[in-house]
Image (cartoon, rainbow, N blue to C red; front, side):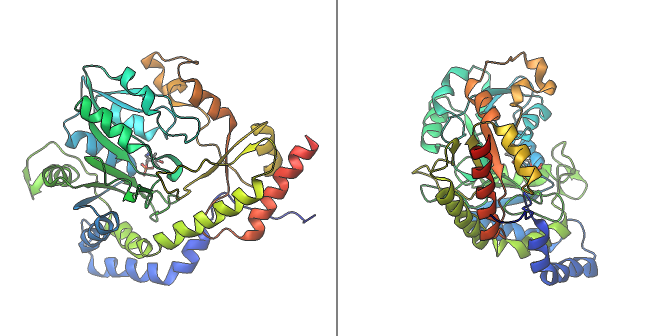
Length: 373
Ligand SMILES: *Cc1c(COP(=O)(O)O)cnc(C)c1O
């Protein structure tokens, strides 16, 4: 029996302590040059990120939410249009649709993968539907072949929300690079995170990429010549410098996460009342989150907290029953799978620097909880 240790949910300090000197140097360089807005670090990071994903164009923006809004605006989606998305995503995916004036239409998820259930997409399509936003939730890819089958049949755009999938591969192809547009977030705790906010829009379509580049900077192609009614949604130069440093480590960090997930899987495989994340043949998993399904979830979460283990729920309330969305008229029971999962899911501590002893301790506490419950 081990004595209590503290296991944080994520540990941003560990990563930044290791990279402190490199990050300081990159940030100081920006300050020395005073090239604060769309400096050369932004362009360099865009190029490197495009190379990482094997796409032609990448446009640095201010957040993952703004990346989605700009993607939709870049495709002229707005008032009167409908956009399909999974009901069990971070609320940003839906809010982006509303921000353009369009209406989000929710689709239930698959029980195994937690991702959008392609079997339920067609019945949600109407003459107003313009796009589908598959979200590669927790770091695992949606079934893109099935989604493209439907999108082609109904002439819909596919925008991939890859905010949790920096480096996930679908049948060997990077997530974010398959749809007409892919979007990323660099929120600090994402697999690739800035020291603040940041995001990216990627595409292989030159016209769309150029339009979004324009939209993020007041709709101007050259200074004071405004082609569109754009906004200020630029990736900050200091954040681009930080991200340029971190991108070099992303593959290594993702591999460490996979290693930790394997460790959890092994130790949890015979524990009753627990279901470890499914492995899906067509996708790698970069474990942005390691999400188990469990009995007595709230009691387990409380027990773990009392014993020094921080966990999370992603997400506790499906979007259709959020107060902010009561205007859409959905009700409890509309999306039974997402509703059921929201009561069973628990995200265990997961970050590259997680130690073997910490994983063993988390599992030991889970076993202890069920033995005594
Ligand atoms: C984090 C996240 C976003 C939003 O990113 P921000 O940078 O926080 O705006 C959008 N979609 C998903 C799935 C996310 O996880």
